[in-house]
Length: 451
Ligand SMILES: *Cc1c(COP(=O)(O)O)cnc(C)c1O
Image (cartoon, rainbow, N blue to C red):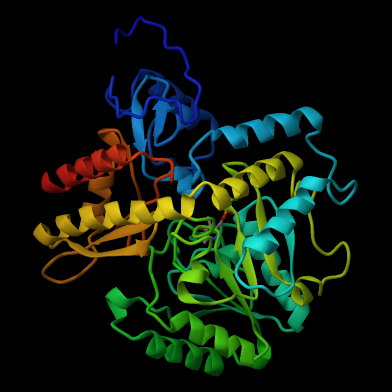
C-alpha cells in the first residue's frame, strides 16, 4: 500500500477480514502521530501495551490507523469475549441510546437494569435466592462486595491472597498483592486488610488440602474469625499469573467461611462469562460463593459491573447505602442483556473448551522442546505459559517481556502477567477463528526460538 493512498476506516465486527496483515512496521506513521499526542496530553501513569492507534476490531483482529491487522490474543483484558463490536451488542446499544441514555436508576428505574439483575441471579452458581446490584467497574464492584459483607456480618476485617488482583482504587489497591506497578507510592492504603498464602501448585508443591490448612491457620492466628467479614479470592487468578489452585483448596476455604460466619466472595471479574469453559470458574471447583463480583466480559465492552449473591446478605444494607450516579447505565445494561443472551445460547462455553484444546496442545508441544516453559495452565480461553530459567526454576521476566514485545512487532497482541512478570497469558476473544489462533502461536514459537 502506498503511503499516499487515503486509508478508509473499516467498520468493526465479525465481518472484518480475519487475517494478520502488516503493511507498515509497528508503530506505523499514523499510530506514531497519535502516540506523540498521547504522550503530550495523557497522564504518564496511563500506560499502553501495543503501540498502535486502534480504529476497528472484530472476530479475532484489531485494525490500526496504518492499515495493519493484528491478531488479538488479549480481548482488551478479557472483556470482548464475544468478539469486538458483536452485532447483537451493537444493535442493543444503538436502540437503547436512541431511547434514553441515562435517568439514574436511583431516580427513575428502568427495565434493563432489573433484567440484568434477574439474568445474573439466574446464571451465577447456586440455586439459592439471590439479588444483584450494578456498578461501573470491577474495582467498584469489589468495594461494594466488601461494604455489603461488613454490613451483613458487623465485622471489619477482610482477607485477600498472595498474587491477588482486585483493582486500583484505595480499598482494592489494599486487596491487591503486587506493589509495582499497582501500589507503589499510592499509599496509605485502607485498613483491616490481611493477606493469606495461596495454593500455587507449580511453586508450592502443596496439595489443596494442605495449602488451605496453611491459609486457614494464618487467618485464625493473625486475624481471628470473630473479626473477619469476608474472604475474597479469584477462583483462578488473573493478573497474578493465571494461577489455578490445587483441587480441594477453594472448597476447604468455603467450608471454613460457612462455619465461621465469614462471607466468601469470589472475584470472577476476569474468569466470568464462559471465559474458562464454564459460565463461572467457581463451577470448575464445585464451589458456590456467597457473593460474586463480575465486570469485564459482562457487557460486550461497555463499562458495567455487578455484585450478585445470597439475598439475605445483599439485603443487609439500608436503602441508599449502595449505588452511584451511573451504576447500571441503561446503554451498558442493554449491551449486557445482549451479551448474556449470547453467552447462554451461542455455544460460547463449548467454544472456550475448543480454544483450550488448541492452546494446550500447541503450547505443550512447544514445552517438549523448550525447557524455559516451566508451566502451562489454565482453563478454557484463559491459558498461561510461565517462563523460567531451566537450571534454577527462577522466573524469567526478561525473556517473557522480550517475547511479548517481539510478538506485537509481528502483529500479534499478547499480554503478560504474574507477580514475577514471567507469564504470557492467552485471552483470545471466543470469536477468534482457529487459523488465527494457530498463526498467533506460530509467531510466538518463532519469537521464542529466536531467543
Ligand atoms: C480487572 C479486575 C478487577 C478490576 O476491574 P476494573 O474494571 O479494572 O476496575 C478486579 N478483579 C479482577 C479479578 C480483575 O481481573
